[in-house]
Length: 334
Image (cartoon, rainbow, N blue to C red):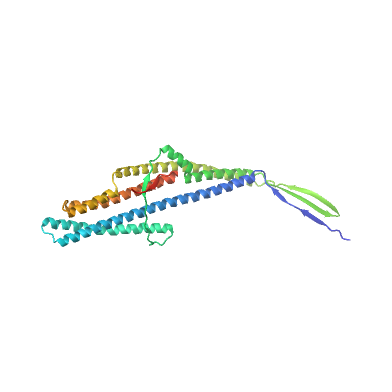
């Protein structure tokens, strides 16, 4: 009669306590870095969309004003021609109006091209057809007073995406060093077994690899070097952050000063002056030179106000990107 022989064994590898927690912490840092990158992209995209929307709104407003003044000149020119002006003064007035009208005809295409360029940029960002019509109704930008530089620096050190990324990378490299040191302690293998061949044998194998090749030391050295690089990168990032913060805050302060000069003026005031000039010129209360100058001043002032607001918006968004503070909101226009 033949005897039946059999053998059973189970092998289980055991890590040193704490190694799994280190790997979990490292994975969490990877997730944090990815979330920081996503948040930075979303904020940059939002800032770009606000700038493009305001640019389109400003271009459309300027083009509308140019069409308004151009229509006003065309009507007045036609009226003066129908009157068959008599006398040198009336003839010279007509020539002044005609010259201003010709100059404005050159300005109109530029205004329309600016609208189309801004529209293409905005449509490209929102994934629409490049020539899809879009009318932007945007409220008046309201800018907050810049906080003290110490508050700006504190906000930047806390919330700035680039600096937070460098800080997270340093933490990650520290975890790499700890993990490399921990992995210098080899895992051990426990293998309980049982076999039977005439007699039953039950036992446990215990094995542990010997670190004879020095690979663990090399990993620790490499991880420590990368940690030092991350420390240097964090120091460089802080200096760059301070530089960017100072530059952005100075630019924002300068733009706010430009806006303070515009605080007593508004596009509505200049538009009203241009409308009054048209009415009073037809009544003979002002001469052609004053009339033309007021129409041109209306367009120039509107362009200057829009440019100052756009520059202030750009400076505010740049400072927001550094500090993560809210420095510009859009309030209903009065």
